Amino acid sequence: MLKNRSLIDPSDFTREEFREIFDLGHQIVANPEKYSKSCEGKILATLFYEPSTRTRLSFETAMLRLGGQVIGFSEAASSSTAKGESIADTLRTVECYADIAAMRHPKEGAPRLASHYIHMPLINAGDGGHQHPTQTLTDILTIERLRGNVENKTYGFCGDLKFGRTVHSLIKFLSNYEGVKFILISPEELRVPEYIREEVIKKKGIPFEEVDQMEPYMGQLDFLYMTRVQRERFFNEEDYIRLKDRFILDKEKMSYARPDTYILHPLPRVNEISTEVDDDPRAQYFQQAKNGMYVRMALILKLLGIY
Amino acid sequence: MLEITSIEKGIVIDHITAGYGIQVFNYLNLDKADYNVALICNAYSEKMGKKDIIKINNVIDINYDFLGLIDPNATVNIIENGKTIKKVKLEVPDRVENIIRCKNPRCVTSVEHYFPHVFHLVNKEKRSYRCEYCDDIVIPYPNK
Ligand SMILES: [Zn+2]
Image (cartoon, rainbow over all chains, first blue to last red; front, side):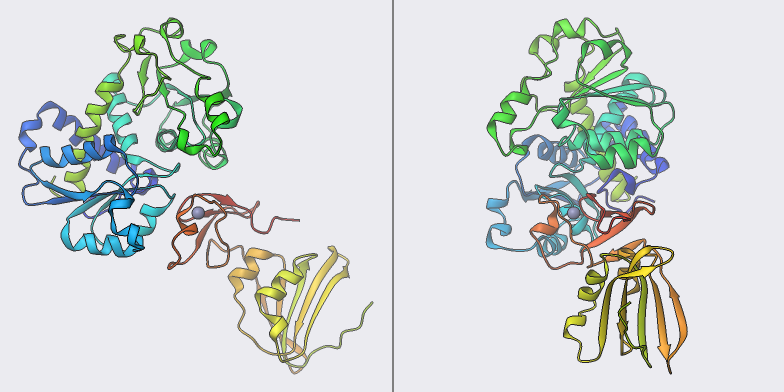
């Protein structure tokens, strides 16, 4: 039962529970009208302690398309945190008003902490460089729509694998499936953190390579997951500038990829995918954003126990 | 060897990995004890080469999770009438609360302070732990 549960980390749900969410997601994609009044009378709180317009809009649109309503804040400065209120108190107050909440916070583990203080379902909408599970749901729904299932495929990850929480979440998730292989493409300084390499990838015995070139590996990939190097994760501007242009996907690099290699990106993009790639049918990042809304609709319905 | 008289009623923590005795001593607040306490460092041990020992001339509450965390090979002897009446076998705890603190500056524990610091055992051999909140891995007391 997913009713009244929280999604903070991909390991919170079993494979079967995720299956329920994806199956409902595919049904919503096929017939969104059917669900347009499912959440009438329900309220979603979006608690964004750091701005992320894209993710917030996706959650809010998902709730509105289900016929529900939305309250919330979009940055810490405008919230009671600015007056020194604790996360626990803010969440306990919001629980008096809303039926379900999505929370984004710059500090890692903040949603886990918050979930210990409330009874309503809470969704982690991103915590620092740590986890971003609904992006993972988005990615999986997209992979399934393009290739049927996630098993027996080679996934390339490129860019900032150290701070890229979408990458950590997706790797954790895919590690539970048969026949997956990872090619991790990044500069030395931005490789995946130790806990992902040791406690997830190696522990599950998944074949992987850590490399610092794209071209030789493009032909092996079923999916290439691009990420941007985020300025706010760096203490010094020089490192950021040096690393951000290290891997740029352009037409020339795409020519090494197979016809059935799809390109994903959690968006927003800066310059790591050249706009000349956008018209390539293998570029699926905008459709991915749309899938994100659908899968959030499915998640909200499941956590509220409506479907 | 340095002579420390045996105790009548109290606790002897023996076979502490050399170097960790002072940490156990500090954790148990033994510097503030108003009873007889001995911390012996680098005592000779046939098995270990060097070991630390703590003798406490009083029966006090011991957090066995902490002892297991710092050194699962240490042994705790409860003494009464000059004889060992109980030996406690230590284990590496699966979960520890308010003993280790997270060092990740991005962790929520660095900014909010009203909840317990919880860590979960990840690897028993390495004695590595994962922060409940941010998943950062620490090895607070490495196997020496
Ligand atoms: Zn932490």
